[in-house]
Image 1 (cartoon, rainbow, N blue to C red):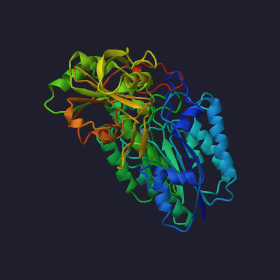
Image 2: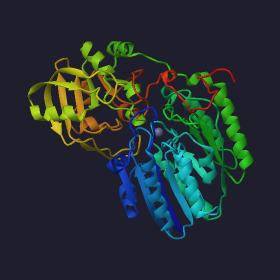
Image 3: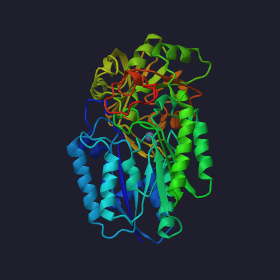
Length: 489
Ligand SMILES: [Zn+2]
C-alpha cells in the first residue's frame, strides 16, 4: 500500500493588520517529498507520529508536502494560491495512493477563502476520490468547519493544551488509517458546533472547566463502537463564521451514534457555558500579586501579546509596570533594531535603549532605559522534550540580553519567538530561578515549558492583538447569537 502525507499549518489572527505572506512560510517551513520526513521524523509533532507508526509497516510512505508559518495576520490570496498549487501538484504527481494522512491546523484564513482548511481538504478529496481513506489530525484551536468534516473520514484533535500529545495523536491517526486499510474498521465522523465561545483564559486542559470536559470526552471514547472524540476549543482571533467551540466524534461505521454523542457533549458544554468566561486581571494587580506571592519565580502570562496567537511579541505593558515597581524580572521582546544597537554598543557597556512597542499601537509604548549589554548570541536553541508545538529547533535570529539597573532583564530577538521552550533562557546562561517574575507571551502554551520552574502563574489581561477581553474585539463574520457575546437565544 502507498500512504501519502500532507501538512499545512497556520493559525490566522484576522485582527492583525499585517498579512501572512509566502515569506513567513519560507522563513518557517515549506518542504516536499523526503524532506518532509527529514524535518519531522523523530520530533514530537503529529507528522513525526505519522512516520513513527508507519515505520512499523511494509507500506510505502509517500511524504508529499508540509508548510507552516507562525501564527500571524490573514494569509494573502497569492500565498494561499501558491501553497495550494504546490500541494495539489505534489498530490497529482504522486501516482495512486491507498490512503492519506493529513495535518491541517484548522484555523487558517486567507483573504478570500475564509475556511482554508475546509477548502484544501475538499480539493484533496476531489483528487483522490471517495474511496481512499483520509485520516486527519487537528489543533484544538482550529475552528472546525462542516467542510473539513465532510472531506475526511476521521479527524482527531490533540487532547492537551499546552499541546504535548501531538506525536501521540499522529500515531493514533496513522494507526486508524492502517486499520482502515486492513478492513478492520470503517471510520465515520460527525460533529456539533454549539454557539459557544471558550475564552483563551479558560482553555488549559489541566484546569477547569476543560479538565472535566476532557474526562467526559475520554469516557465517551471507551463506549462500544467509538474510535475518537475531540474537543475543539476554537481560535477566538479568527473572525470567521466557524469561530467557536466544536466537538467531533469518530465511530466505527455508525454516523448516528457519532452525532448522538456529539450532541450529548454539546449539551453539557452549554449547561456549563458560564464557566468559559474569562477572569480578567489587569496589569497593575497582576504585578502586585506577583510581588506579594511567597513563591518565585511567578510566571506572568501576557495574554494580549500571545505570540502563539499571532501577536507582535513586543508588547510593553508589563515591562513598564515591572520597571516602575523595580521587580527583578525577565521578559523577551522582538526588536531587531534594539538588537542592532545593543550589539553595536558591545558586551559589558552601558547604553540607552528604546525597546519594544514598535509593531503597532496595540501593544504599549516603547520602553526606554539605560541597560548594560550582558550578552549577544546567534539565538539558536534546541528543545529535546515534548513541548507545545512539538518543535525541536528554534532560531530567533541575532539576540541580545540586556539588563536595566532595576533588575529587569530583557532578551531582545530579531525574529518573533514563541515561548515554548525553557532552553530559550537556559541555553544562553539565564537561570530562570534567579528571577522574582518571568513574563511569557502566551496564555496556556508556555506552561509546559515554565511550570517545572514557576510554582505560581497569573494570566494577565494585557492589551494587544490577542486580548482576552474579547468584548472589545469587533467581529464582522462570527455567528450570532453566540454566548457570551449575546445572551438571548
Ligand atoms: Zn493550538
